[in-house]
Image 1 (cartoon, rainbow, N blue to C red):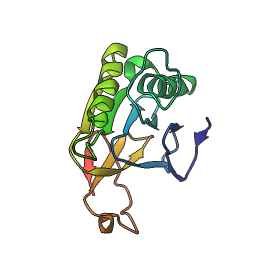
Image 2: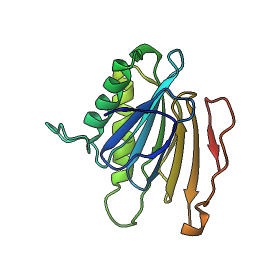
Image 3: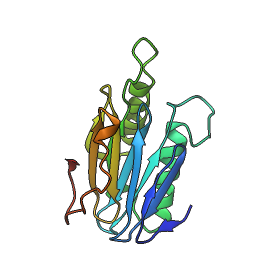
Image 4: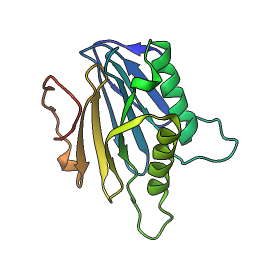
Length: 172
């Protein structure tokens, strides 16, 4: 895992990325998966993960919630972040197929349980529903945007540039 600088990077399933560069943008597309965006406002660093499955006893695979969350936290601590300053924004956890078990809800619950257990505050969340989401996160500022993907035509070819600031979720 390397820190990013001055680029837009897609965070794929089972992965995470971190940065403190003001020009770095992390992005992902989620269905039932969940992405946690963590930010340390003092060090001005942050990161995003993308996990597929809720926890399973003994699972240390980063496709599972606890392993993915712990790896993201540890990567931020290595860059000088402090656990007591971290704040989280959570996205995803949609129920994509009616009639099947709601893995998205379980993913969201697993992320929330991890954060509660670690004493990390959740400053914003957009979990559940029936639609996929495109998420963008600026790790240096903590700013996040999401777009609900009702139809593939809703995905913009040229997304708007970010405004300075952070602390909320913007719809785009």
